[in-house]
Image (cartoon, rainbow, N blue to C red; front, top):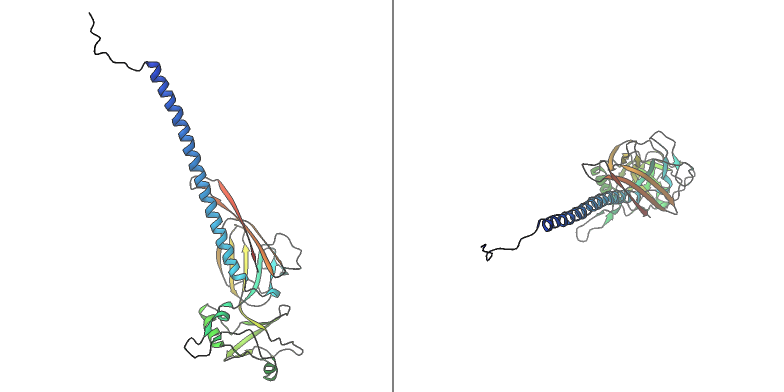
Length: 284
């Protein structure tokens, strides 16, 4: 006789196979979900990097363009030797270079005389005494309220030179006057004012021109520290603002810039796939 008191129930082979199949299906679905989540993560990360880089480049451009002297803003279609055209009247398309003279905002916004009771003056005030200027001689500009030695020091610290800077009167068509030297609140120009020159009570002092250029490799560069003269040839130094730029567009109207930059960004190190990000900014 067979003793069956200690027998236990077990899974049949069919049941084991079914369990294995179910586990395989669940694992497959789970792996697919995890892969999709990871793919979405790396795409979002690449998109975030592209947006941040583009936004930072636009902010750097905005910080320079807000000091642009309107009458000096122009474009070149390609390369530094191309013809300079006024940004408002040009009919060129697909221009690659945006150029302008930037007035010296650093010493204009700096203040001397920090001690209590001291007279506080900016590096240059932006206003001249028209009568005193006309009576001082042909190549003197009298600008009360300025501390031109402070301006000279600040410009020198920025690798510029106030001797060689330019002076622009308000409401003129890009006409500049070279600066020879400064003392107190008197600016001595390279040459006397031509006969009939309209001496405006408002002026701007500039020691550098600037240019934005997208080269053949898609690098957006800022050129700086070259002659502060309208339509000057591009030279000086340059710095890389953004690489892999696919689109750079700008429009100037009514005293405001509208800029658009697009760039591509690789999704990961182990793939050639890229995403594109575009940002726009209006600068007044």
